[in-house]
Image (cartoon, rainbow, N blue to C red; front, side, top):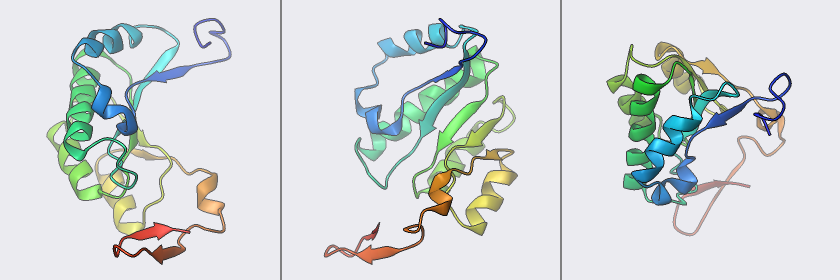
Amino acid sequence: MAASHPLHLWSTAGVHPHHAQSFAASQRSELNDLLTLKAVVAVGECGLDYFRNLSPPPAQREAFIAQLEIAQCKSANPCSFISGMRMAIFAAILQEFAGRLHGGVAHCFTGGELELEAYLELGLYIGITGWACDERRGVFELRKNGAAHPR
C-alpha cells in the first residue's frame, strides 16, 4: 500500500518478536530488499516481547540482533522498537550496537521512570500511545503461577 501511495503512506519492515520463531536466514535478504524501498522508513517493529512470549526468548533475541545488524549495515533508516518488560536485556543488546544505528523510537512505551531514562540514555525517542490513557493501565492481577498480568 505504501508503495502505491508514496505521497501519503509509509511503512516499516521487520519481524515482530511474536513471529521471531519463523524468521529464517532467507528472510534477511528479503528484509534488506524491502529496506531499499522509498516507502519503507524504519526497521521494525523489532525487539523483545517476553510478556506474551509467542516466540521463545532465544528466537526473539536472534531475530532482534539480526535486524539490528541489517539496520546498521544496510539501511539508513531508524528502528521501531518493542521491549516487552525486559528492559535490561533489551538495553544490553542495544548497547552492543551503540553509535552504529540510525536512531529509533521505543514504540508504544509503557514503562516507568527508570525505563524512560534508560531509553533516553540509548538515544531513543519515546512513542506514547493511547494505552497510556487506558483505565486498565497499571492495574495488575496475580495469576495462580504468581505472574503479574494486566486486567
